[in-house]
Image (cartoon, rainbow, N blue to C red; front, side, top):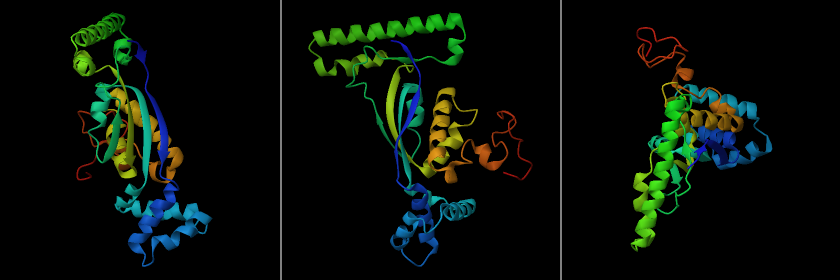
Length: 245
């Protein structure tokens, strides 16, 4: 087993995302049909600036459901099972994760926490354990295969693999889910690994759709104050004044 690093790639997103959101918003307040408006959006008959201004105004009022019509699909690799366990708690989303039942983990990589990496004694103990976990997996898998367990050998041997074992996952989220995800996972209180992945995802979203994601991030970015309270605040934003929450 060897140390690895997280990698986040944007595989795809809804085409013409701003125009899709604009059309969906306008449909809510317009007597006409979104399909009749669509050619004007594609031809530039309604400028991007006008679309962005309208979308921003409606979102500021608290109406956010139309942004669910746009989704982003990411390939996230080199992350720990600890991270994916946190990630799949977010709904509404779609996930396709590398299976330890069917993928041989004999040469699996692992994620090394920065705090462990910074402490030589802890790092040495951590790396020795990961090598032993890899050896145990290979030994158990081989013994089960010799005992004619065949196809089920990997699914049973995987029980010795630790949370640090690296995994790959494809994730699709709509814009509303992404904003909620960023509010929770970009916060300094979020676990370091998923926080790093969330920030990389946010960078990719901002490149494609800055009109929606320019102010996305930790919840304090939207509120202008820290909602975590005096015990947990990082100090970046002030605590709320009485009655502000």
